[in-house]
Image 1: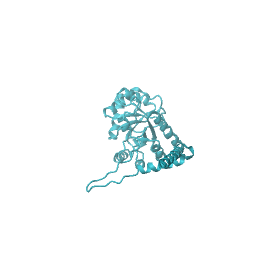
Image 2: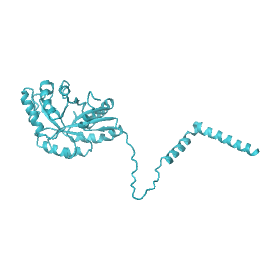
Image 3: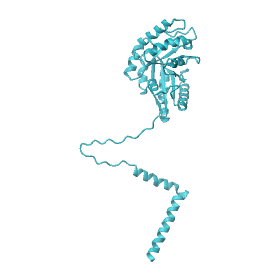
Image 4: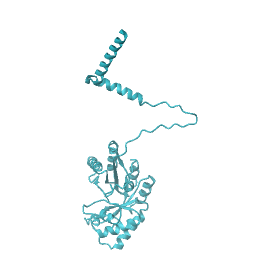
Length: 293
């Protein structure tokens, strides 16, 4: 009987000590240390006895799915040959948009496809300022329907293999529903899509595209109106915030070293915030454009 009383006393003391350990705020650190040790022990890799001829493949650690998607298009490729190589070094699917009929247009197109990038045709179109020259083969509002379609066709023939089209300049041309209907009819016949660069807020390009049964695509942010690293970082941050709010966003910049270098420096921020950079083609395939998401 005496032994049972002693045992009961010991159990009572242990119960009191355990209760104090569990509920005392002064022992929180010690409790956390023990919990961490238990977790580390239970989660440690288990030794697997391999049978002869059996290949063991460890289960990969799952990575979090991206919460938001970004498309980045860089315009004005074709003036020189080196920037497409620099763009490839980023190892992200940025879309190079190439002006046709320039010295390096075909070369850049060829390199982009070799690198697995999805190039766009950067179609020259009439700006509001008559002193600005959009380039060879540009489309003007004074042209007939036949001439507009012909020039669009010629530009696409020169840039065979592009995934879509966006406007180079075009602040006047894109405000004309007639002009845009002619342009988009040719784009549609080639099973491509049109991205409205929105060089002017009154552009009807994306609206006409939607009417013609194409995806409604328009840019959200211009990244480099000023070729300044701090400015571009600020624009990238704005683009990210738009994407986080809407689920996706499209930014347009230009083919220059400052813009490309700044995007590269921003890559860890994209990763930290679980943002995926995708091609415009992938963006369309996922149905992320206006009216779909």
